[in-house]
Structures are given as C-alpha cells and as structure tokens.
Image (cartoon, rainbow, N blue to C red; front, side):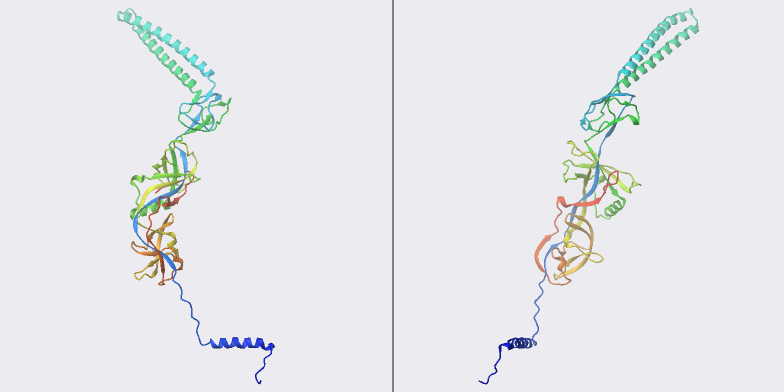
Length: 406
C-alpha cells in the first residue's frame, strides 16, 4: 500500500501535533467567567429605647467602723483574753492588766476621802454651835466668819477627795480592756507581761465592724465631665440624688447577695489622685466581705433615653472612623459613618449616625461592598434589649483610697 508508515518513535510527535490542533481550534472562543455569588448577610432594624446602664468600677472594701484598742493607763499587761482574728462581741474583755497597784491607789483615795469627811463633820458641828451664840452676841463676828470658812473649806476638801476616788475607780476599770463594738479582731501587738503606756505606744489591737461594710470607688475628672455633659444634653439620666443601687462582685465572680446604696459623695476632687471619691454601704451579715478586699462595684439605676444599641459585629472600623452598612430604599448597602459610645455587653451604643427604623447589616458586614447585591439569609428583627448581665459599662479604677460613680 502507498500509505505513510509511522514508526513507534513518532508517537511523541503525533501527541504534540494533536495538542497543538486542539489549542488552535479553541483560540477563537473566550472563557466564560462564573458569576460572583452575593454574600450571605443578616440584617436588623434599628430601634430606639430607654436602656438601663450599669457602671462598673474597681472598688475596695472598708470597715464601716474600725476602732484601735489602746491602753488608757500605764501598767503591765497580765493576759490576753481573746483569740486573735475571731469575731468579738461588744463589751467582751480583750486584755487584762495588773490591777493590784490600782486597787491600792483606790484604797488610799477612799482613806483620804474618809478623813476629809470627818473634818467636814467637825466643821459643820462647830458652825451649828457658833451661829446661835453669834446671834446673842456671845461670840464675836470673827468667830462666826471663821466657822463658816472652816465648814466651806472642809466641804471643798471632801469634793476634791471624792474626785480622787472616782479617778482611782476609773483607772482601775481601765485595767480591764473591752471591745466597744462587735467586729473582727486583729492580732495582738503587745504580748503578756509587756509594760504598756497610754498614747501611740499603747496600741494593743484593733476591731473592725463587719456589718455594714463600706465599698469605696472613685470617678476621674474626665469621666465626671463626660457624664455631666451627657446628663445636661439628655443622653444620660441618673436616679434622684445619685441614689444608685450598688452590686458587689468578688474577685472569683461571686455576687454578694445584699445590695447597697451610695451614701457619700466627696464634695471635691482629690488634688493628689484627680478623682472624686464615692462610697456605698451594704449589709454584710454573714461576713462575706472583709476590709481591704478589691472588688467590682456595679452602680445601677441610670438609663440612656431613646438609646440606639447595635451588636458590636455590625460596627466596622475604617481609616478615620467607625461605620455600618445601611440598606437604602432599594435594599442596597451604603456605608454610614457613626459615632460610637460605650460597650454594653455584646452591643455598642451609637451616639450619632443611625436613626430608628433603619436596617443595617449585622452578620457578614465584612464582605459587603457599596451598592453590591446581598443575599439576606436572616432578618434579625429589631435591636435586642440588653440582658441584665450584659449592661455593664467599665467606668474607671480606684486610687489608693478607693472610690467612683457618676
């Protein structure tokens, strides 16, 4: 036959020719790009409502009454009669001093009083005899004056001796040192057998009242000015007379069951810390709180009238400002610059830029483009009301002395 005979060595060349032919055949057709799928998003309708606000502060507890127990007379400390760190009752004996020198002083004072009382009795008897004689001119006027003077002098000596006795009795009573209140006792600063004196060196221990308990926190000057501006413009409403309800949360997250009230606002800012001291008082019947603890104080009672609250994931941050995606009348997304306020749990207060009734993108906002198509997979409804546990606005920290609140 006259056909072309191809050897096996030409197999590679044939494959190359076939590949070239296929490529040439497709040169005249353009590839079809697949259509871009609109991003899946969820939307919500913005609403304005009065929203409770809770301000969170770092606070420190303080005993509502702390008393230093000191020696009031000089002497030897005979015995400690309480267990250090225990709760002591009002009137309970804490220390006993050596009372023997004071017993002796009291006995001597009573002896002096008895002597003066005897002299006074003699003087009164003498005056009683002289008066009728003077009326009969049987004795001179001078004798009567001397008798009157002697009676008054001995009476004054009796009064002075009575004062010495009372002072000796008081000093003797001071040898038994009792607690003036019910509270938690501290350690003993003086041991048995120590010689103690009144004054600074006579500090023996201290007792701290546990119920009620003070909670001190503070408000910085910048925060105070900010809240004052919000109150004046109607963006923040606080309870009358700053009567906040204060909830205390311990370091391990335990919420103290009893709630307190703000009972003291410092009249001026501290020049040292630049903060405004605020104090709350709350019941502590079980002694859950101890003096000096660092806790969280949640001041409740304020509201933001007609506030707009949106989820944090709906708010994006641009080069110069925060923004959200707002759906226009045609359902197309438009970028809207907003002014944000504080966080409230998982939500964010919007101070300016949004109005009630507008719809914004929540989930999938990061994939949205201006005017681009959207696939709304879920309409989240209106702005959710903040949960009780998610209303906290962190408002500041304490200084060395504690204390804060609007």
